[in-house]
Length: 391
Image 1: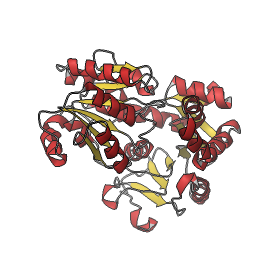
Image 2 (image 1 turned 120 degrees about the horizontal axis):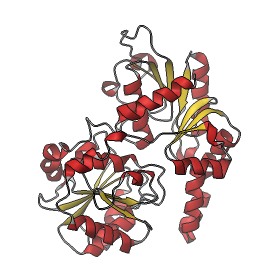
Image 3 (image 1 turned 180 degrees about the vertical axis):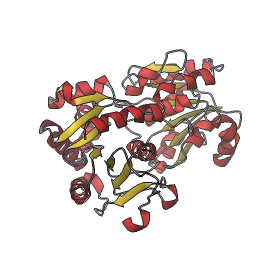
Image 4 (image 1 turned 90 degrees about the horizontal axis):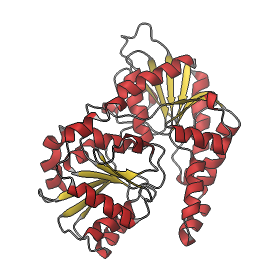
């Protein structure tokens, strides 16, 4: 699909507030940061001229009307080897076009961008190295992806190659200061949000039966949902061990995302969970799976925010997540879910799941209403203000 084919203009925006470029490796509905960019383009195009510069773009039928899409030519390479090429091609395209402001997401952001920091890799690296041992630690150290990202992050942040930064939480701001000496005056605080049209309590009625039948989950089962692409960091294996430890045959685990499915199913069989762990690949319709679940669990060891936690709550699901997740600030313990302090502790996850199970009379509407302040229209209104100040 060529750029000429995917560039769309409505022509109704006679005098846009500003011309914005949103830059990242991807823009679609199948990932976290990618979904932020997709939703941001959809919101900003109502008053701005929006261009998305990315390598991986949504299907033609999914592109929001009025948004220009430019596919970056650099191919996707393993181990982060394509990140430098993505940044170079993005910077080249930025120079060719006339934008009032360039908004970046991640280390491949062009120089002088307003960069929305979705995570600080150095913080994850530091935390992970403290907890990994043996072969797991050796694999991490040998993986060139981490060294490439850390080097590019250092260039972007320590050398102040940005115009302005946005941090998801005060904790992320603290990480920026601790690892890269970023002045607090350079940073605005703004969390990620959710789309209330896609994530709401009505999903239960729409999809509970349909999605369970699709993957063979009994209608009377108690279903724990896990949604993540980076499954290891976000705690899939200890969550599986905790489900097994509960010893209740009517509890099923549904895991959505880019997963090593053969390994997951072998592990499930070893734990005595054969037929009770269901894997679903990455999807643009993740909200359907929130509709079929009873609770949501993400015992992550590092999470700058955790958009899926907010989306789960918006869908009325009580959640179990880690206090290390930025989105844990939205969880009212006992009212909308519970927090684990040590996400690697199977015993602590078991205790959390048991407490979720005991609270079968959760008020779905109350849980959903508790995250209204994170709706995208609220978040992106603030985001647009930051971008306009940075022109």
